[in-house]
Each structure stands twice: as structure tokens, then as C-alpha cells.
Length: 284
Image (cartoon, rainbow, N blue to C red; front, side, top):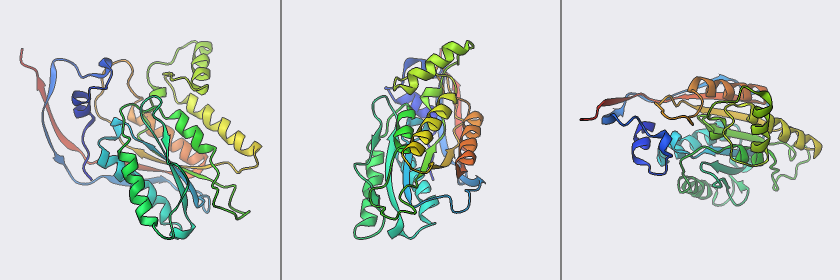
């Protein structure tokens, strides 16, 4: 796989906020080709028999996931994590993507992976994903909507209430950016606004923990089983600048690991292939 470093996107994507531009005295001199291949590690195993055949993919389509081709590749990675466990005619899926404000989107309907046109539908879904790539990573709404899904195709009483959510992201949600207020009351107010659907930088993953707990309680109240959550964490340790940057990669991966473990789906870490990057001082 070919990864394009976030630094290039900082320099070339005009939709970035000014506070996220690189320091004015630095520039990219050259980019080399990736050295080797990305490494995929299953660091937390899914609980046996936990993953169902009703699957919702929640895909980070922001610029920190690199370019369109790589976002497509990462969706395929999530797909392969699941599809290898079931015959295609037993797998039903839907896809949510997230990036900029008000740009949360989902595929129009649930899709059957098997039957006539199954492969064509899959290719169409991939094209739909890369046609909707954005910049930011406002992911709270998409994840909450995904957790409320119920597959309309599954008529089996033993499985129709079950759901697996596959979260594919580097964990750099825009909602978690910034500095969290030290005052607990102010921090909780930020969380409340974010949970009401406002776009807030809360400075913590706490708001995501709260949101998942709320939606799992909703499922239980509506006689649905708690969703199993698979997390696929994409390494992103590219340099950042400004005051509203994402959480450090180590913190992001720790949270994704915690969620995959807590909700039985497991955690997969994708370590990107390194690239040669040269920077130098701009000419005075």
C-alpha cells in the first residue's frame, strides 16, 4: 500500500483551518517512496463467536487517513476482517463515513454481500466512499447512528438483534481535539453539547465513551443485543501544528484498543510503511 504523509495535505489542502498550517519557516523538500509494507497486527482477539453477520462499517474519510486510494484500501481491510468469517450469502452490511461538519453519510440501504451483483455492489460502495473524502474527523454522530442500526434482511430470531460495528480510523476525532477544561463542570458542559449534536472540541475521548454507553443502553431498551465493536486503528504519527490538533497517536490507539476489548470485537493495529521525508528552512 502507498501512504501519502499528512504533511503534504497540510500544505496543499486549502480547506484546512489556518491554525493547522505548518510553521511558515518550514517546507517539504522531497518525498520518497514507502519503505516496505504496512504491518497489520491483531493485538486484541475478538471474543469467540461474538462477531455477527450483520455489520456496519464506520469509516474515517478525513485527510489524516491519507489519500482516497488509501481510505479505500482501509475499508477493504475492514471488510476482509469480517468477510473471511462468513460465507458471502450470510453477510449483510451498511457503511457510514465521516469527515467534515454535516458531512456524515451512510449508504442508502443495507446490502447483501451474496447473491447476484454482490461484487458489483461492493465495488460501487468503495467508489462511493472515495467520492466523499473530506478533511476533518467529526465522527461522533456517525458512530452513534451506526450503533442504532438493525439489519432489515435478517429474519432469524436468533441473530436479527445482533450487530457488529467495525470502526476504521486513526482515532484522531475532531471532537477529542484541543485542551480539556480542568474545571469538571465546564468539561461536562462541552460533552453535553457534543452529545446533543453540536460540533465541539472536548479535548478527550470521554465524550465517545459516554456516547457508546448511551447507544448500548438504547439497544438494550429496544430489545437488541449490545453491539460488538471491532476497532481497526490506523497509525498516524505525522507532524502537526496549531492549537486544535488531534490526540497523540499513542493515546488514540490506546482508546481504540480499550473499545475493541470492552465490546468484544477485538483491536487491529495497522502500522504504516515509513516514508522518507526531507524538510528544510525556507529561504529568507
